Amino acid sequence: MTGNAIHAQDLAYSYGETNAVNGISFDVARGEIIGFLGPNGAGKTTTIKMLTGQLVPKSGKIEILGMDVVQSPNKVQEKIGVSFETTNLYEQMTAEENLKLFARLFSVKGFDANALLRRVGLDGRGKEQVKGYSKGMKQRLMVARSLIHKPDILFLDEPTEGLDPVSSEMIRSIVREETQRGATVFLTTHDMHEADVLSHKVAFINHGKIVALDTPHELKQQYGERILQAEVKTQDGQRVTKEILMDTADTSAQVQTLFDHEQVITVHTKEASLEDIFIQITGRGLVG
Ligand code: ATP
Image (tube, rainbow, N blue to C red; front, side, top):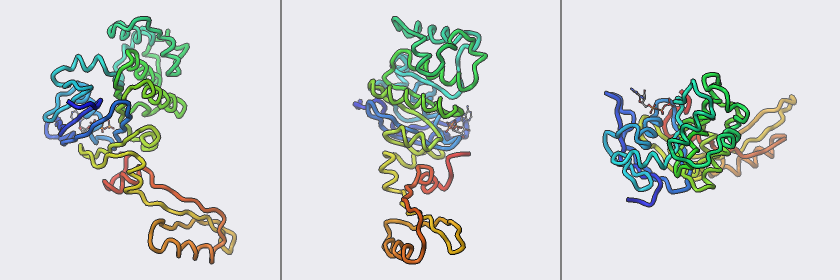
């Protein structure tokens, strides 16, 4: 038993011949946000399903809050909140009824559906049947439902996929608020910006394997190249961008040459994004 919120060791899962998850290990401390970042089919959803007791791993071990998920799935499920990409809401019922049903299942006393709907930007829409909701509204309702019993760990599978920027930011604020309350958050995404701004640490997953696991800052330090970008004015009045790789032996000589020979208008440094680093490590991008 570990003191971590999540302990996963040598996890593997296959669908027939397809090895979806191929021996992954990681720990998540209590109160931490971990972002699982990888392209479609990398194994993110399969991992989350094993962690939440919906799939039994082919091999490996999972402890959630010190409990073995395979042995005690129900005990674990009382302590976690889950929101999946594919919604499993009751479409014929209203949003409010969906939430109240879950509140009863979790024996939550004094549940305030309106307050929760307001938190995900659905205030005033609670009396509508879910079947009339847009994809984004259903997704926000799923997130709301995952929060009902104030879970110790939130598992969010692509929580902002397909949402407009305002709704996405609302979900990100909720994630931050939940960690302030003391919750741990496990989220999957293929949005590198989201992983960067939200996560305390990021796991890059590719073909069912974790290929890097660290804080966004450390990943950038370790793999990212810093580039100096200068906008210069050419003799015929055009503006062009020149790039110089920083932290090399002749960076300063190149900078000197630039300023001696060009009419420099602006200069700034560009840091590698998580997407750049993912491509560097795996040879493929995050989309597709
Ligand atoms: P996405 O971002 O598209 O949801 P993902 O990273 O969550 O992708 P998974 O859904 O875990 O990836 O899929 C991992 C691999 O397992 C893929 O090759 C996928 O085609 C396969 N797979 C997933 N679910 C099933 C299933 N029910 N039956 C057969 N193969 C599956």
